[in-house]
Image (cartoon, rainbow, N blue to C red):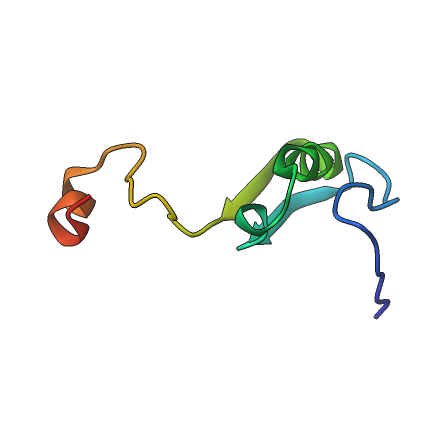
Length: 74
């Protein structure tokens, strides 16, 4: 196994390499998150997935979902 340390905005990894590029609780905690999303997108293979799991800091549910609205009062 190899461990790589790099900046999230410019990883230095080759583009179109990964089937899945994922971040959790990153974008809500940094300045200029769009730059990180652009790098994540660059790293994903054509047809691959870019996913970010972020906190709902505004208390909004988007897209609206009646099942979630009943549970969370969004």
